[in-house]
Length: 192
Image (cartoon, rainbow, N blue to C red; front, top):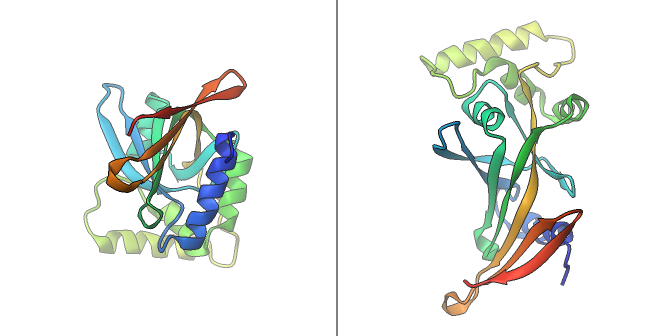
């Protein structure tokens, strides 16, 4: 059994990609504003490794505002069909613009246009307004590459704690906790 949290994550994530029916890369992202009021929503994991866990968003929306004001977050992967969870807590940092550009280039054209058309998390008077804005962006970029909007980029959660939770009969769950210790990790168990 791996004693490196990233190797263990890779093993569990590979199994989830093979067996989880929908969105194996979906994770709950919990943030808090400057007053400590929490907020949680689902986002998609778009990169991971020893440097952290990456997702992308509009930097003018509520989640980005909270992360920029209070750069700490928690992630939760829940793979119900596998009866597993992974909890991650740590500091947050923006990704390098070159990395954001590279990821943005892999998105579908309509997703790229949507990033330009959306004022994420702000009030919208009607669905028609959003569709009109999308169509305007479609016309604007007709016949040329859609560049990454300056307000759209990614965040990386650099973990301090990673907990692997495995469901067991009679609620005798197995919980392995990895805590950052300098350049390495300390590992221990938690009671269910």
